Image 1 (spheres, rainbow, N blue to C red):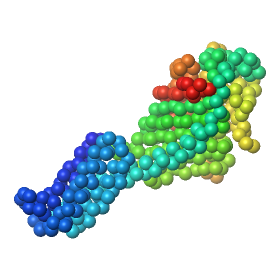
Image 2: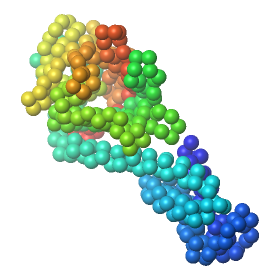
Image 3: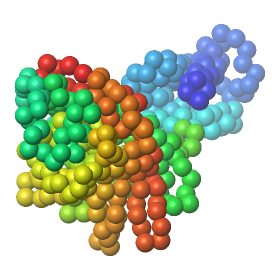
Image 4: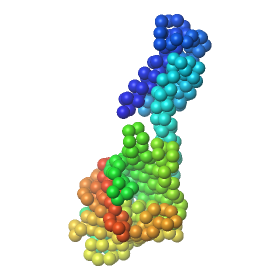
Length: 366
């Protein structure tokens, strides 16, 4: 699809050269019956060059292609209107190019916003090279100690930040169609914060882009169609804030040393279950971590608001491990299933797989 779009821009640009050739009488152009002055011929040439350059920049993934394409379309359409009899069908190509380019511009702005937010959670990290020992986990419930041991964090430096990549599928209704997605997520363990950004495939050339975040105890969920039209925009209310905190707490299963941070406290429930409480500022949330007898993470469950509007109610939210894998000496649940336990039945809305993960520690090592 990417090559097809580049080909469309290129061919559209080359067709504009006909106006230049006609104006300067470099060859006979029978397709153009209207006369074209030399000044107008220069504009046809300029538009052609903009499209050709845009196609090249698009192929080499340089964001500047967006500006060249938009300017090219504007000049092209003015020329087409002036020479409508011969050039009217070029409008179809301009509309296609403009729609895809506007979507790309929306995604570019979305990415720029995320990059700024990312700087807010990755700046001023405090590096500590002390390694985790048995003494550091002695005060934890026995099953949590076993989790730390089984996951392989004993003897390693405390994780300070995380970057991970995900793939998976999601849906918005119980019987809805699964939509594939890819995502990148960043965590600052010291401040209990994260930024998750995803691209969800809807149809060819049309995506949803999403960003979920937790910074300073405040959550925000934003989903846009083609990076332009907000489909979901919920932020900074008790339901969104606590939901983002619960999500962070559950996802510490991917970086177990977070369980040693002062923001998280533990309470023993039984031989395979422990209750974790995350506190940020004056707000706290809790959830149950369940493990098998070997200390492998099995599931996390908590009461979480099902949505962020005023009618949202607390429902049981469960993350279940489906498979485990070792990344850089740390064993984590790399495949998980996320389910809402609703009155009308279970709603498995998300299946996710960690494909890559990078840990930053005191030595800035993975």
